[in-house]
Image 1 (cartoon, one colour):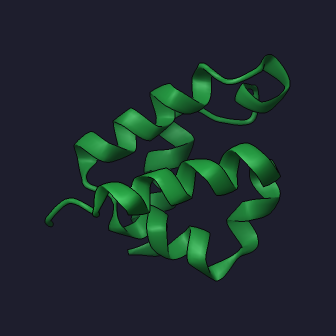
Image 2 (cartoon, helix red, strand yellow; image 1 turned 135 degrees about the vertical axis):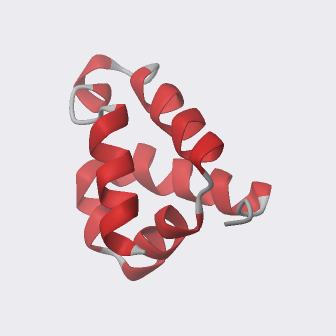
Length: 72
């Protein structure tokens, strides 16, 4: 699968940063996650872990990759 556009990754990061796990119910967020390449999914997971502890706690690489696979 090809990689998502850089703007897609940034839009995804914005929605997850602003709305946390609530963003996962939004169709646009789910679509963006499904478009990530393996490398991009790892990048997003790492970036999420660097956020404030109350935001980062909800994220793991495994959780993001599992969600991406279920959305494809």
